Image 1 (cartoon, rainbow, N blue to C red):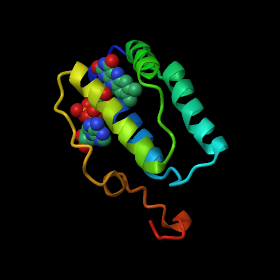
Image 2: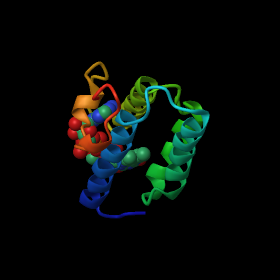
Image 3: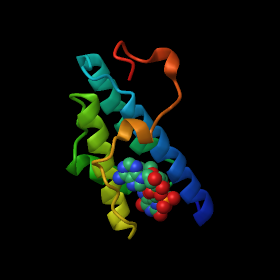
Length: 118
Ligand code: FAD
């Protein structure tokens, strides 16, 4: 367990950034294998997350709200809602999941954009 609140918040911000950016780059039409990979990643992530209390809470959340992986849109919205549940628990404001999450979480990886240029 990290005893330093600043370090814990920094880890959280970096982690959410990675998770939301991964979802924003997830295929529009994922294969079964891609869907499994994303789902497994979230479960493994929740087991290895370095803040123990956060990891335990995240595992409970995943149990209650299993990963949605049918498309980029559903994965992105799912993670946005999950993050909002953590926000709620921590007394943070709710984030508007109606925004274009693809624009908010732009990774600058233009080299592997899909054929529609997104
Ligand atoms: P963060 O919540 O880190 O968000 C970063 C930025 O993401 C925000 O500034 C905003 O621009 C954007 N954002 C906010 N909400 C959303 C959303 N719903 N969808 C998309 N983008 C959004 N900390 C604890 O103290 N206790 C815990 O139990 C705990 N559990 C955690 C579990 C996980 C899986 C993770 C990744 C982090 C956890 N944290 C926990 C850390 C906590 O969620 C925050 O990351 C940390 O407190 C820093 O908060 P912040 O206000 O800077 O914004």
